[in-house]
Image 1 (cartoon, rainbow, N blue to C red):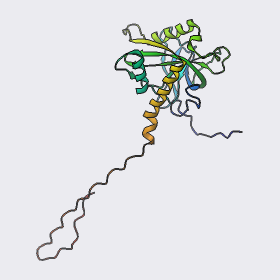
Image 2: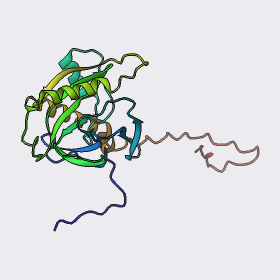
Image 3: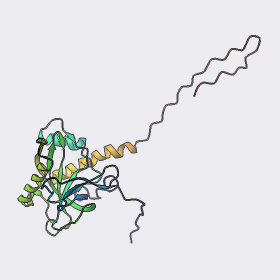
Image 4: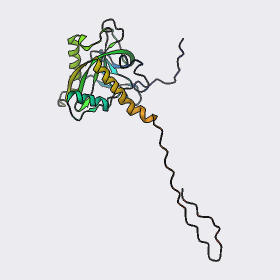
Length: 245
């Protein structure tokens, strides 16, 4: 029997969980939202606790399980790929972990859980001037979707529904139209490339700074104070005055 490691606290869903030993071919995904949710849940970045972000003000609900891949970050490398593929200028990462939609035929009643998912493609979404990729995946060993390997194998109406959700869920009547577009629908190989880049972005921001040894501060040069003059008629002790701290 495999020995388990006991912990006194729950792991942070973003920083404390591995994306999986087979990533990016198979990834661990943290699920925040399920299709039946009438409110939008989102992980609090500081605590790692799933929090209520906002009620769904309109009839827009995500048609799949939705969450993110742990230890990923939409930063410089992901943004660079977006700019290369779309021709857009001044693209930045949105500063969040990489989003993922997971297809399954099963009804999952609530989020705040981990699943194993197989990426089959993705949407290269651009929100303003920010890269906001959405990885499309299938639940590993799912009876209906589990054997699919490419986004072209998914039902067209399902993809259209996902596109509609992501293009409209941030549009709020009365607040002006938001500049959101799906600039590219990509396949499995490109999805894995985006995940690899997001893992590198994460390591650069969160792992590499901790692995570098701290630089020792150079010792402050000690200034030798001039010897105090002995009062007239008395010999000096020969000791210089001690410098400051």
